Image 1 (tube, rainbow, N blue to C red):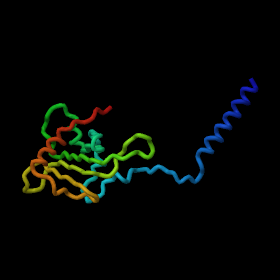
Image 2: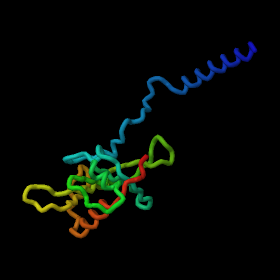
Image 3: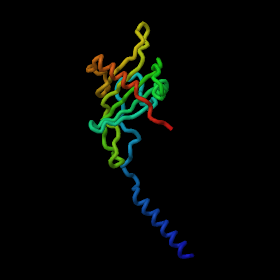
Image 4: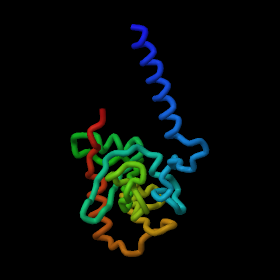
Length: 169
């Protein structure tokens, strides 16, 4: 019985020494707290990354990943099971990134450089007609894209506002 106790004590000491040897003091290998490559850089009136994440998509063929963000009314709309009218104060943003390898997890993919930010919201400026507005931002820093036709904008508005929320616990 006494030898078993001594064995466990010695084993514990060896384990502690091995763990400490594997963690050198002053190591410069620190994991960044945030993924700076995926940050939204540009003159945005609001940061959609601070809104609710509604759903995500992955396009493996083109190596893109997207997350649909929305404010509280947009989330409520995306969670509804009926085809209700989009609330007047709903704001949606579909952010698409190029995928990159995760340096901390072999085989995993994380967001890389921003490809685009697509915003959908109600135009509620005085004197303006109430309509859903579509704005696509691209580049670094993010700038409005000049390549979007009215028909493409209508198609993207319908698509983005039709996305349903992922199942949430």
